[in-house]
Image (spheres, rainbow, N blue to C red):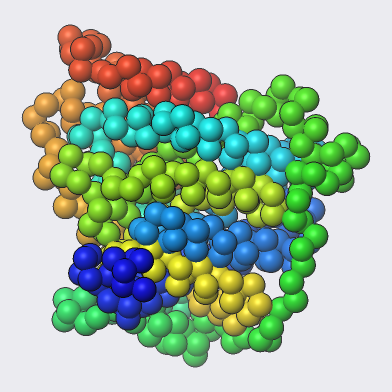
Length: 438
């Protein structure tokens, strides 16, 4: 165990890694409820969606731990699942089999780019200031997700966002989770983030926020497996055939690829910062292995009918709780595997209880602010666009795209065109095309 995962070398222990894996799993467990509820709108049976979601996350999270030996976890990505349900299967009327085939194709394309070295090369071409901007933006994004889950912020038609109802039980549990996490971390209690989640969930029981389990074991349903190679429920044509022979659907595959491509880039940098495998110049160690597994995850997600499986930014919670190796991922993956059978029990953890862990991770990621030269607009303004763009557009890839395009424009007009590496031009142009397609 120690030799394979390099526990001593990275200053960690088996107990720490197990605890960090549980923290990561609990921070991500909401996907077991949310993804099936969204995919059911596409015509997928809820039981099948739960099975696909849990097994897709389990297989690829364990694979991430084994092949990259870094504390990153994977699950069905939010955003793409909504595109599948409400755009491809909703307004466009496609069968869910064809929608999953599009995800499958997108995953194959990204894997090809990784194996060719392009995805890693683009990451290396990003200026250091923009890398810091991505980390900071991800911190704000994670904190925003936590505050929303805890009911501390809510949507508002007049002001876009406002404070939640202070007297609501969800708000109380969310606020308590933040307070507990900060106090426990300040007292140097091991597993502070995990204890914050558990205690808040327990407090939420009498408040009606934490539901009691309605059962213990749930049956597995494999009817969505091999989705791209099933006949479309809408057209009667095999999903993969319909997707490949329809040019408009290939454009959708490109759109999904752009989202997956840069979401993982930002997530890997955010988790690497907490897991201490981000170098001083902002490069992620073992990035090629991470990107290969993440690309394969999209293929597996489409094949299983789970939507695109991708690296989750909530992995940073486990890294912040001490996770330093792939053992953290393996433990989280095992919990996802168990969740496939015991989903009624796992679903009792409310998202409000994870609020403190996510907000605290956001706080920890703010220290990169001092590494940006704010007196230099060529470096600082594009970084600011990323920092603001990620949480304000509620999208990692959109925020990165705004920063990339801004960096090229500012560099050109200020006479710093030679500073822009060729692949940054390619990435900026790709983002421009991506935005025009939205």
